[in-house]
Length: 178
Ligand code: IMP
Ligand code: MG
Image 1 (cartoon, rainbow, N blue to C red):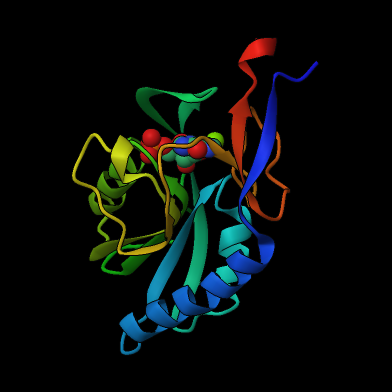
Image 2: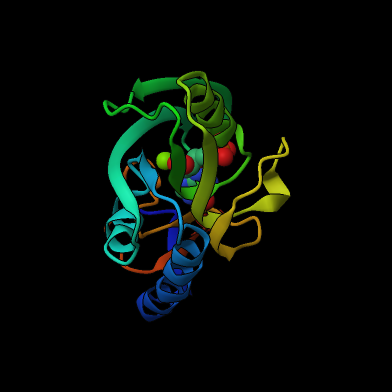
């Protein structure tokens, strides 16, 4: 028996509308410069696919995968599971993320990209949970700032489940069944 249920936080329609304005912000910012988009697997899958089809001046894209999470708690340690194959040397890089939580993953990715010669590293995150941050990482572009909920859907998972849901849902634990 499941000991949690899902409560809608952001609807599919809300996401579609927000993406239009977010893509405009990114297009305005990069109107005179090109960039490489690096998506953070697996959570950024749907966000990146939707966003990339609305933005201009992206010369190439690739993926990175870093692992930091076990269940809903961070281990604090980062392992790069998949490295991008294209060169980012002297390029503007836009990292596309599902969520900025503690910021540990984003910070590790930023260091990794700078070590490999990126000219500038920018972050575009679909969701931001600033109340959980343990460092000074801030997104340059952000879909929504949310309170400290554990959320799933639109790429975000709970133990690999619910990524395919089209909206964002709060995972609410039912304490009477735990
Ligand atoms: P950070 O290193 O703490 O910023 O965590 C980044 C990663 O943790 C994200 O890319 C997600 O995979 C995962 N994560 C953090 N918060 C949530 C959440 O509310 N739902 C699902 N995954 C989350
Ligand atoms: Mg995850």
